[in-house]
Every structure is written in C-alpha cells, then in structure tokens.
Image (cartoon, rainbow, N blue to C red; front, side, top):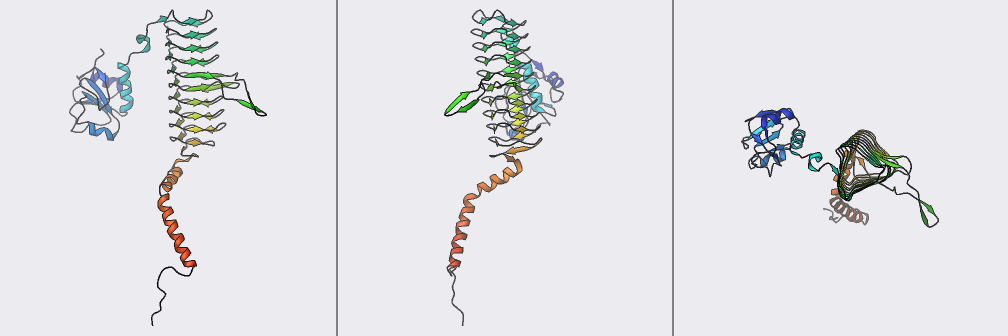
Length: 354
C-alpha cells in the first residue's frame, strides 16, 4: 500500500504544511467519510461544518482551517486541483492493473498491428488494417472496425464500439458502452419514403479526449466529425454528424448537439443542453443546464433557458415567471374594478352631503 508523508505531498502540490508534516497518508477520501491516515480537501465553505466531525488526518485547503479541526493542513491556492494530484498518486494505472498481452479469446485480424505493452482483453474484435499504438488497454467485448487507428497510452473500457476509419489520438479514454462512428442521422424525402443518405465520413478524436459511458458520436456524412484535443464528453451525450468541438471544451451529461454545429475552444455545455444544427458557439461560451440553443452564440457569452438567452436576461424572465400566479390574481382584481367603473359604479357610496 502506498504511503506518503504530508510534507512530501505538500511539495508535490506546491503547498505549505500547517501542523505536523510527518503525518503518514495512506489514502484519500471525501470530507464526510475520510478516516485516520487519509487526506481530504475543503474547496467550498459549505463543507466547513464537517471539519469538527471528519476523522481525516489532513486536509487540503486554501487557508488554515478553523479551530474545530485539529489535524494538519496543506494550504494551497487551488485545493481541488491539489487533491486531484494527490488522488493520482494512489490510483493504479491501467498499465499495472491489466496484464500486458493479447487474450487468446479475442479475434485479431492478421493485418492488424498492435504496439508494444498493449493489453487486448477477452472477446474483443479487431478488424482488418487496424493500427493500435503502444501501451494501449482494450477491455473485453469491444469492437474495433476496419482501418481504425488508435494512438499510444489509450484506455478503452468494456463494450465500446469503434466503427471503421475512426482516428484516435494519444492518451484518449473511452468509457464503457460508448459508440464512436455510428451512422449520422441523414435522410432525404422521396415522396412518402425516407431515403437513407450514406454516411461515408469519419470521426476524429484528438489527444487527451475523454468520452463518457454510453455516449455516441456519429460519423460525418462526408468529411469529419471531430473532437479536438483536451475536450471531455460526459456520459449519455449525443454528438451528431459533422459536428466540430474545439480544444478543451466540456459537454456534460445528457446533452445533444445537432449536425454540423461548431463549438469553439473552452466551451462549456451544462447538463441536458440541446443545440440545433448548423450554428456556431464561440470560444469560452457557456450554456446553462437544460439550455435550448436555437441560434449562434458569440464568444465569451453565457446563456441559459429555452430558447437560450443571455444569462442575466434569462434570470429576469425566470423571476417574472415565478410571480405569474400573483400577477394573474392582481390582473383579475384590476379587471373587475375596471368593469365596475365602466358600469358606473366602483362600489363606493354616491350619496351627497347636504
């Protein structure tokens, strides 16, 4: 079991120890469940309430923790990022977790080329002219079609389907059940019949891309559907044909991107976002959860709601919507008053004083 002195962890994350730097850390955990020998982190004030009850031997925080916590602290500017670095120390890399070599229960085409130190799990299918780089892990029941090229140090979890001609860069992670290169949804109307348009393009996943479980990325009708380097796709995401996603973008779970839409760099789509086709989302733009985007978004803009509007405007609309029952009641009362006035009576006395 791995073990690190707290002072060593502080050096790794670039932090300063407050307390005993000689504490031995043998694991990581959340602040609610951490026990002796484990380190946790505090990145949001709402979790300060757990400082008095946590049994963690150390905490990573952006400040010296309050008097309720009596353990040691690593103070660093970005606790969450520092904790991520520590978690990596206790993670078992796939190179060590799975034995190197090819299972005899897999089908490997004679024309396939598999790099050194790769692992091909049982019941995997690898088709003709496939090229797999070095130190790649392919877990059981995966399908890799004709002409696929996979770079070095990739990790492909069970039951992944990678269709023909797909190009995958280095250090790509594809989670269980994902389908890369399925046919784009393209049809032409011929009278009452929907004629299928052949989808003869491809999918490109550049370096450091991660694809979540049960997500689907459609091959292009012609040309490429492309996810550029560093982008991360969550679980249950649908990316249609000929979509382009820029570097280091984030697409959260249950989002859907229609065909030929282009996302710039560092774009964030929150959960259940929906984008129509043939629009552009500028660099550093953000779409709030369940945002329905019907037109292009300029760079650096945050939008939310349906149809998606600039976020500050959408918040005002949400606030007004919440007051609708009250406003409707006031409207009905005003309407009755106007009707009484039009009928010559507002309900007040008309008797003259003499």
